[in-house]
Length: 312
Figure (cartoon, rainbow, N blue to C red):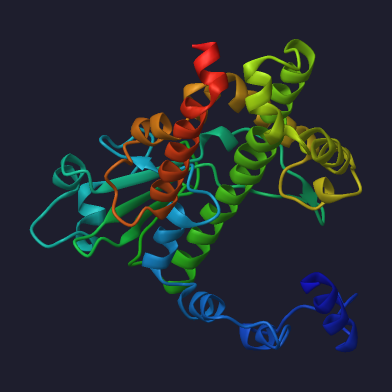
C-alpha cells in the first residue's frame, strides 16, 4: 500500500520517470510530503554529524565491519600526533587503545576488485580504513580515514580538522565501501547464498521425521524461491549489476574470496562473532543487545523442544 501511494504521488508530481538532478536537500524534502517521521527529520538534520556517522557503524545497515582496535595496522598511516586533538585532553592513542576505546573498519577485501567503467572512466572504491573513537560521552566518532590500503603519495589521510568538503567526501567514500561490502557479503552472500546451501542440504539429506529437519524447515519456507529470484536479478547485466560500483565479475570475485577466507560456522554465530570483534562491552550497541536477546530466545526454544531431547 505504501509503495502504491508513493508511486501515485510521484506520478501526480510528474517525477516518476524524471532523470533531472536535485538542486539541494530542501528540494528533496518535497518529494514525499505525506511521509515524514521523527526519524526522517533527525537524519536530515544530523546526516553530516560525526557522532551520527559513527553511530551508524553500530546500529545502521551494516554493523558487521567495526571491530576493536588494539594495534594500528602497519599500512594505516595514522599517528598519535594526528588524532590527539580529537581525543580526550591528556590522553593518547596508545592509552585509548589499551582502554578499549578505539575501533576501526578495514575494507581490504575490496582491494583489487574490478570496478565498472562509467562515462569512459574507471570508478573508484575505497579500500582503506576508518578509525573511530568512543569518547567519554559514549559517542562513537570517526577520527581518521585512509581511502586506500597501501600508503602512497596520493593516498592522503583525512582528519576531522580538514576542510568540511574534504572530510565529508572521505566519509562518503568509506560509507560507499561499507554499503558495497554489506550488500555483497552480509546480504547477498550470507543471507541468501549461504542459507541457500543449508536449505538444500536439509531437503536433500534429512528425512522428514529427522529432529533437525523439523527444527529447520519452517525457516526455509521461502528461501529457495527468494534466492532464485535474487540470482536472476544479480546475473542480469542490464539490471542492478550494471548500475553499481563493482562489475558483476567483481562482485562474484569478492564474494568468493571472502567466503573462502572468512566464512566459518563460528563467524555466523552472533555471540562468538561479537566476542571475536571485541564488541561485547561497547555502549549503545543496540544491534548486539537485541540480537543476543533474540539468540537466547531461539537457543532456549530449541533446548525445550522434544526434538532436542531426542537428538541429545
